[in-house]
Image (cartoon, rainbow, N blue to C red; front, side, top):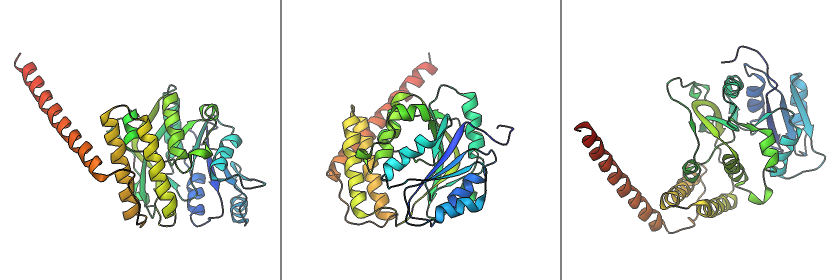
Length: 299
């Protein structure tokens, strides 16, 4: 870990609009980092001054507040964060998420050791309420470089993810036309541009709450994500993982967000057929590996 108290490598950007419910918890976790860094709160023309007043109350030299003169839309407000940042690296903190106090210290130590990656990510705890006991440093498990199959099966939450600002700007940031899966598309484009290294350490919290997503937005997200992932899939394993991701998202919205009446964009039997194919493939592969290892052992 690093042995200094501040850095000008990373900016924590917090895009905000109207909702103040969890903002104090989010920004306090940024301010309290063991290694201090610039923090920018970007207010997308809220109807109140609560964000501005709270930043002023903190009276912290590395904390800045910016208010857009007009509402830019959620996605372009994220892009405004990239524009206002002046550091080499940027991380976005949603106004309802939380960072472990060691996150910036941890990320700086990795950035200084590894210059080839264009993004670094940690694991996120999830749930309706942040429990600091869920944060931990994992000393025994290695990091890994994300591959295409990772994106076919899942996604990267923004909390605890830091990326090169220059690369983000080259990609023109987040595309409003990709809403509500703009973050997934952007992170996949990052993956295509260079290495994204993920660490097993849980140093961020991504909040699930029932008021986050409407039924219409959830359905649009499921439909657009499926269409996008299938367009990227070149093998049957990638197609299986894409279907698996959508089934998991569908269940998450029902069980966690309490959203009913969501439709899968494909017949469920299609997923079952792909899953059966995958199970058979894995069984055959395991048997072949056993035979190979046995042959090597006795020869």
